[in-house]
Length: 155
Image (cartoon, rainbow, N blue to C red; front, side, top):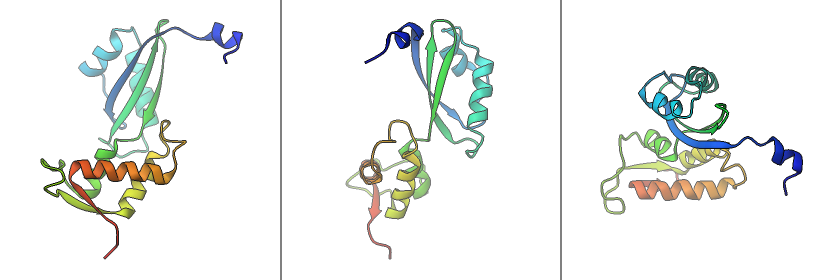
């Protein structure tokens, strides 16, 4: 239940914008301009804030960003770690998944890779209350849908 003070201090939201940008290397450009410009947000400030927050990642790592634009031309944003599919492709050393998952195996990874990906994803806001086991099961399911076989035992 919200208190009266919380209700009165809430800013009206104009939009929620999802972007995927390269870590530490976002630039003013057509994508950012089109998405943020229509809500009159300070694009240069966003680019500087985003690049500062994502400096610790390798350059060109695709980062998911959720921008909440308010009607008073201010914004807040959260940065998510790269997608599970991106991590799986890196771990498997492939450019794309299988064209026929379940029939053709694109590559093989180990459970160690799965647990490492799950640990990284556990820091995401939407996964922070999930157990490592649940996130790992989700990663295994995503791998299967991409045609990547998960090797249970180390050889």
